[in-house]
Image (cartoon, rainbow over all chains, first blue to last red; front, side):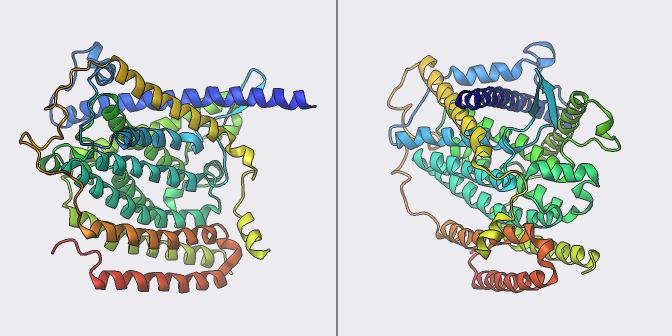
Length: 350
Length: 134
């Protein structure tokens, strides 16, 4: 009895380990190529060619950049707090890599006689898990900025932390209206509901607008990139960092963009659902592949949107940013929540 | 008893600690990966450190004092207010999940909670706690 239980656990363990390795390395690869795409999109919008020297069309550029960061000299300033200085990027990157655990990348595939769920962990608090882990990334920024013992880093870290926690409130409130609709916090259940009926964006346009603004702010992307405002704070909270520690801060930002796009696609745009296609007519493996492709297409669209906005809209001033977060988005999200609640109750005719 | 029932209703997926097992594996994996990369880059990078290089950067001029100085109170206020309001937001989550079962009665109860939330919110704004420009 015991050995059977152990064998089952070992198979499950291996399956999950392979899935985790694939998903983590895939998100790292996508983050690498997002940096490349960012430069290409910037070039496109500014009528330039962008990076085109390393490999065909410059396709090996991100590897060259990554290798350069890996092999640079590591500098820890004399006046800094050494332990916290290393802990900062460590936490930022670990938190970024942990978020992908609850996102359903596809339905399921059948391989080697086993049915493998394309989701690392289907936990019943999925949405809360994403919130919790994303908030841990703020510690990475705050610890790194403070430990550098540099005035620019400190100011940037304070700004970044205040911004992140302010927009987290509006983000949490805007999601409540969505949860009233779905009645579940599990990401998988939310996707399955959207497969049977319409995508949530149709019911929650205002909620989605608030959510996407907050995602931009949480990822420190333009127009909310105040922690890295080059013209006033030099380079922001990672000013004193070099080599892979700097690389991890930059990387974490791109992974956050990727995960943010995945969460938006999952919650509001049907996740791995393909519009106007009945997945049950396809065999399970084909349906899974089509589903993954569909989710990736949505993610790529959102990543493009991030870049498009970055090269189009100028940065906010800090008081404008805080006023938008506290005085506009929070009341708007509360209003959206009450409106949604009243409409659902009125429609169900109680 | 009623309170625990309320919490249990949140579950839709299976509700055991086994669900969290893969997250533990992922944590070990992520920590291992990040530690290895930071370690490797520390090992293979050149080490030519001079006292100037190890100074903290202040736009090229010599650094004055250190950064362990008092900071603007506004950031601290924002953090305190965040803690207050975030706790209130968290209370909406169990309500949202059980929203359909609770019906109009639950809705009116939450309306009362929202009005308290708004009263606090309007108070801090009128008090100028979120006023950034002096």
